[in-house]
Image (cartoon, rainbow, N blue to C red; front, side, top):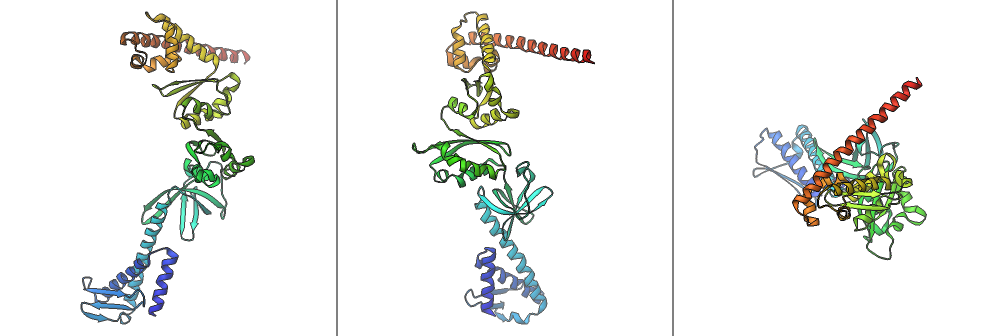
Length: 405
């Protein structure tokens, strides 16, 4: 009997991944509760010791030895209930400790069921993960029994339960997939420097190689696109752009807007804004469907990116030149200086304000205020003109519609 107890403890410890010492402690506490209930004295001086090798149980009330086999059915039932509760608590603690350590890891589980739109995934024989609707990739559905990869996004204790939140939409899920598919990343030869994602649609990943002999983009794409194809298939067809990282913001912005070709880039550090010029035939590519390409490029580079055609850019410079000409002591050399600061329109000049002009260009505060005030006045005039044109356009369309009716 005593050896059987030791074997049972070992089996429970192995199956539930609980330290044996905890289980022996739970057994001793359960027996103490049962004995106190038997004597009807919750404050009784009861001690129980189980030999960890032989399984022999020694119980005492004060100095008097007790044979627990003589206690009867009710104390045994009490011991059983206490034991179940304590082992469940130990198992929760074990699961929590294990998965807190694994937070941010990619795991492979099996789809168990859907519950009110949330996906329940079997991680192992004793643990389920929970994937809310917002953490699922839009447009993807999964069948019961299907193998699925997920990111362990969050681990928390809720109502005496361990809740493991899974995600397939988090940017770190992409990082994890690249780590699995591209050995050079897991070996720290290639590093993912930045990542921007709109789950289910498109992701941009900026990579750099720490070894001059290794091409980071080629390594991530793989032979004939094999590596990137595996990741795209896992994501259900989500587009992935591999961008070559560059410490130069101008070069990085140019790379991030691919496949569009950039003609010119002006950076305004004061506003955190990059003005990018592309030819007319590249405009739709640069902006992307519903503005997705430029939006992801902005998040990847951490610059607010404005896309202009050469015509729009030249109009901005023209208005800026007129602004400079209107200011006393202003000459056209200031236009080039403003452009060098990333100021390419009167709106930019108005937004920047006078202080950067004083500190960067070394001009007086009085002259700087004149430039900014003139720019503000011209900006209002241009806005009024644009509003007038829009109103006229709407009126023309309404008149045309009435004539056709």
